[in-house]
Image (cartoon, rainbow, N blue to C red; front, side, top):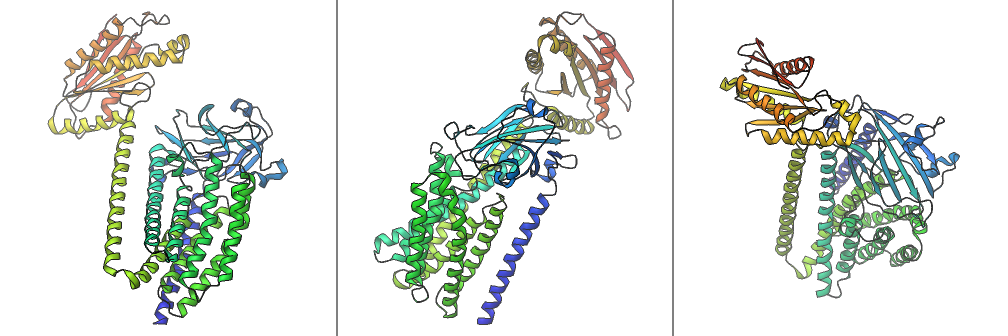
Length: 626
């Protein structure tokens, strides 16, 4: 029996080591694409296939300066700083824990996508982010002193869109409240849908742990209320509530979303107090659970030491009490060995529950050491210790339930409660999963819309055209395509400005959309070009539709004094094909494009068309209207 148990313990230990190795390997893989001299080349990176990217590596870094994007371009002698890292790691630059700094990173060959986002995990105490010179987000208010700065610490997702294949990312950061500043955690770039899904999954996981701890805590406190001498349940319940509170204050900091008006210093104090105060409650729980194996003097010592740390948190400013974590972590490690020693003593004495607690303690120790390793690297890649605590608390709960069942409760009653609890958790997970599906569906719908004109975009156009082409092959019905270009639009932009140009694009898009029937699909093709897909439409009818569109825009009399026609006009290329398996779908686009080119060559403000009943374009028609 003892050999079997020893084998199981060895197996679990090996499995945990393997888990840590895998996580380290994953982290090393994520570091393969890093910034070098302030530049990351994304030529071989696909957000769709490879997901979001951590912007680790060498950033341009300028201490004690808030530089605008234009000022950064004038700097000849560049300085670099490894991200993530604390400012004090670069003392040769004069960097300190308190101060301000400017970061800059260039992303080259950015993959083409509609919506991008930057997820910032940890930049204490305040920051602003610029993308290609435009402000896309901030957290708190940066300042050059403690009075000027407004600190906030909540992981945030900042969304933006760019047309260029290069992104200039500039971050201004200040820290006069926290123990140390700088980009100290993950900073990811990726598609918005991916980053939102990742965040929702993390929140769901945290809420799963928080809900479990909350239920366990309240349940055992309720047991103490009905049985005043049950100090095991009291200490265990309070420990669960504190660990649950700490879980909600870490990771995605869901606590800040529930209580957005609570200042940063209160959130930080609660985080530290939940950690420091849970230790003595756990020590007393352990003492009452294994009296013979525990030391009462040691338990009192743990209570006093943790109490001193808690008083420091309560009565000192954030810059002081946050520094105590560097002392409390080694203290926690020493306590872990003490706890493991007690469990092993109870295990060899074959005390009830000791075997389960030993396994859970080993799992918790592994996650704690791994989180400590990540903390030393200043990485925010995962709160594994929360999961370890959850597993450990579950183990403690099972052992405590076993002891309580021997005195005043039947096993069947406890099983019924746990079963109901599991059902509630499963229902919660199912509901959250359904919410995530609905959110992803809404995001997918948004990805088919052009952000400026609010009509379908090129991506949607491509999908519809392929579908209609396949329908045409099966039904042997004609398919027509209109490619539309606003004439002399560059001159319009140069003369009236890009904002007026945007309004012109919106107005033309609206006119096109309102003029079409349900069988037509209007989309923005790119720039000042639009496309109209006409299903089951013969060539003659398509020409009529095109001429109607051209005339309706011309009759609108939209002023354009740089055009020889003095008004906004359209050039339209029409192509009609009977789709077949021998002809590629791009053929109709090429033909419509040729017709559009012909219209422009012949003076613009006209309709040109091609149609075919076979494999090639064999008929041409020109319609000119002024």
